[in-house]
Image 1 (cartoon, rainbow, N blue to C red):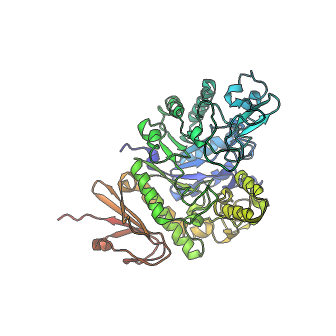
Image 2: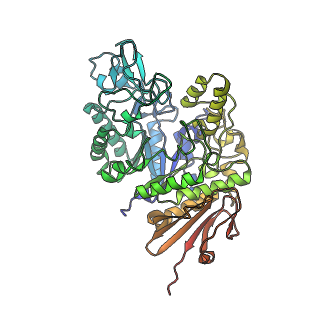
Image 3: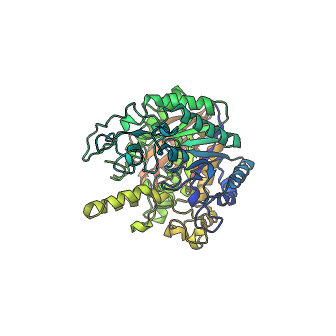
Length: 551
């Protein structure tokens, strides 16, 4: 196993808008992150993934980039960014930037020029097509809007956008565009950044001719991922990017890759080593039936099968429960019905995921057991996806369905301000924040948990320390245990002559587990309970250092 810094690091994801406000405008910023670097050092993380901080009109909270090399004014200046990078590096923490190159903002100068005329040099930086009569060029649906096309009256053509109409897709078939992107990436590397998380990177290649989608649908538009995800040319583009930007650097590139599965994921990170890591969506879809909003209860056996299959499919995985696009971990996969269950299930989930083989990504607030927000009205929402969904659900049963979906899985759940203390606005700001603070901030916050040695925060600090210092938990082989048991997720990690066993009771029941008697006499190196027996307590996790005795 080739050793890399990103294999030995726990990555902490920061959503800058909601992390810490330093200039009293209710919006988190770069100086706010700098103020809290000592907290990251104490926590033990070795890298930070920063959601987009580039200049943006914020139609999709920074994922619509107006200028790839300018800092969003709400977040600060280039000088602030330089200081952040310098301070992180002084504390031996790497910085991973977000790279959004499937699309830009419609306010980016490339697109401003592109829409001026059909013969503009920037026209082919995007997908422009004549209509099919008075209709769109094809029947593709967008992630955020019914149609993936918007008509532009000036040139009387349509442009493609898989997301918001203010996020036109970039045409990667254009070599001039690719050159601009590679140059931009290399300039950020030359400034000292250590890697990139690449937004929906496996969507950058579209099928030639942009044909109609053919999936069954109730309306005029079809979600046509078979024509825009994992297309053959994707590998050409990623291999070229690798050669031009990544190969000669000690960096890390992780791709967000919707629609990837255990059968084709290796083509991205094993066969051609186009990416170092990838974020797949199968776990994020585990509690969905007919799309994201149709929630079904979390199924332990389904989870075990899924995680085991990914551990087997790839030599190295990305390990995460949540991010800025997903609801809060403990509200979704754990149990926040009581304070006791919240604490115990959050600790258990942390170990269950992060002691697997792979690089761990912890989203801000996960280490506190932050929960979903109790939204009650549309005015509280900020996320474009949730707003589009609820506005289309105008009445009756569908409106009730929409609200239930947003409360359970809406993206704003993860974007409420970081809860630092029990003061007004949770210590995030001293003025009204851009989005409401979760009402439970008075009890769930960094200061309170820092003062409680039994808190989720202290547990995460111990867990991260174990993960980053143990050769077994970093590079050890993985073997699942108790595959047919419907209560436990368990596995063993082995490296050379060392073994660590992880046993997680994923239920709120007291459950008996019949395991080898010799395990009872081994050292428990991490647990959320003090007393151990064959009867596991609700959401109990037990990490056992299995010492081999020579005969």
